[in-house]
Image 1 (spheres, helix red, strand yellow):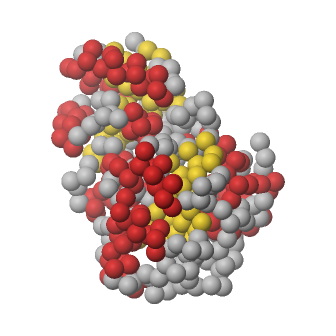
Image 2 (tube, one colour):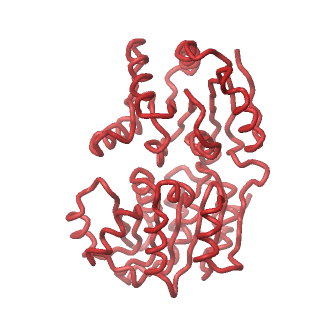
Length: 370
């Protein structure tokens, strides 16, 4: 594996990476950086979450910025508020020892008037959710005329959340002297249409780890049980994991509430995260979880987007997700950046056919535990 220096990353960035404990490039970083660092090119990468994508696009993006130019030169679009804030935080950390440059994040849930004022200051890299960015564009509060690179992070998820029109609008506004770097765990029809519409026909395409759609550092376990036995089986698993942190995924908001109440009766410290919570509540829960004050997070799929917690040991699927690609996103909360993790699925007789199909399509093997 090449070093960051061999990939062309300068010493000031490497010093910042070392402080973050990032010593060696992950697979996607080693393959992506040489393809886009210092180059004017569109780029497409298919890679699952948790592989180090932020550094893969973030380091070349930052390297392309002119710190003396106060305009927005790099734009990163992300599907959720949580992921957008996580990306901006990482970009800020990467620049600790570099010539000073400014990044900022705009997303729904924060006061737009505060964002409008902040954008009057020099900002070289903007991270945004598509909806809030277009709100700011309509208010003429953000100038995208200087953008030279647009990064679409987790593009498939942005389409699922209904941001297609906003993304199209942003890409039209920035058309001309800009590159698009698209990262997506899956390449469904909607992404193919976007690529055809906005990216060059000969754009370099990278598929990281072709044999594994899901991160190979994750062990996939399953427990066969009846619906009424799920709580007991999960409690058994939690006892074996000691004080390790993990996420328990449920399919609906009500499922998270009901299962959270079951855990509370058992005296298990946890927090529940779902879309109906106020943004201030969601932020508070995520701060507590990231600081280790809460061991377990019970969450729906959408609410968990952007969770990036160091050393998250496991995820538990209380119910199988509706779509197979959601399994990729769920399991990708653990086993991040080369670390190992566990993804545990509870299978009822009703799920037997689905788990076989999921394993076949995602090319993973589930090991059954007692």
